[in-house]
Amino acid sequence: MRHRVKRHRIGRYGSHRRATLRNLSREIIEHGSIITTTPKAKAVQIFFEKLLTKAIKAKKTDVKEKSVALRREIFKEIGDRRLVNKLVDEVAPKYLERPGGYTAIYKVGQRRGDGAEMSLIKLVEE
Image (cartoon, rainbow, N blue to C red):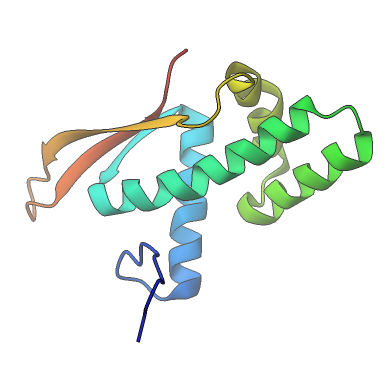
């Protein structure tokens, strides 16, 4: 029984789900917003906001070892040093004083081919 187990499964097995969330997060870092299906948007929102919280902590800390450790944790999740640097040095400073809710999901209609509900997930502007 799955009592108290809450996770967006998005119809994939574990490694495929992690790869999907990793790729969607990379696109959000690179482009600032993406259009995807609503269940994927809800799943990646949770995943991405945890990454951005780590990036904000890395930016705020004065202890170099802690900053490096947090950058390595982020790298472990997204696997691209260039995007880690962009997340910590460019994206995180915009949200230093914000306690959470870094992304917003807007429904944009249905996909023409199969009628799947599509959503825009984007970084919130200050």
